[in-house]
View: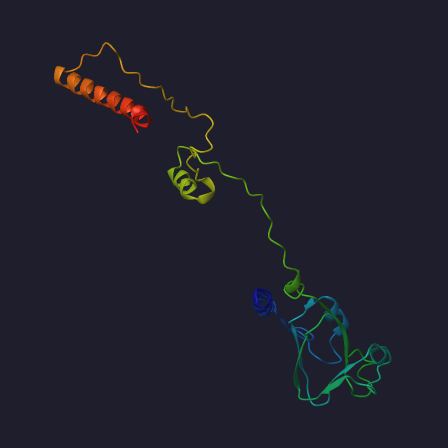
Length: 221
């Protein structure tokens, strides 16, 4: 789609350039005409014809304009014409580069000099090829490192998943200090409350009595 749009634009610009640069060539010049009195070959050699230009012939009824191939031009024979005109005011557009040949078809007039060779050159606009447009130069991309002076880049890098650092897991962190558990040994130097001490002593004596009674039970029965 883009290539089609480029082609249309280039063609349109080329057409505008051709229209702007086109010239109308009055055959024979302002001091002459399409007749036997004008040196038509000298006039044609002094002109520059380009694609888009036009040839304008003005002549009376006893003349005409016949476009012929190179052989008909050299022999002044209009027997195999490309096209003939006899309206007295003929305009012929030059639509393509190359040579074209015109003579007067009236007997004897071509031999008297009523013949011209037109060498049409390609215009600057028509030489532009839409399909050969220059490719844009590819410039290398220089990576931009985020700095403290560009907060936008730093913020975008921090918000990007690629730059987000996961919190270290305690399961795989070999540098974490393992907790050390030390047994708590009751200190003998700690002073107990007297009521608490007597209760503990009574419980201990009851426990010892229970153990002895349990051991002596088989002997009783």
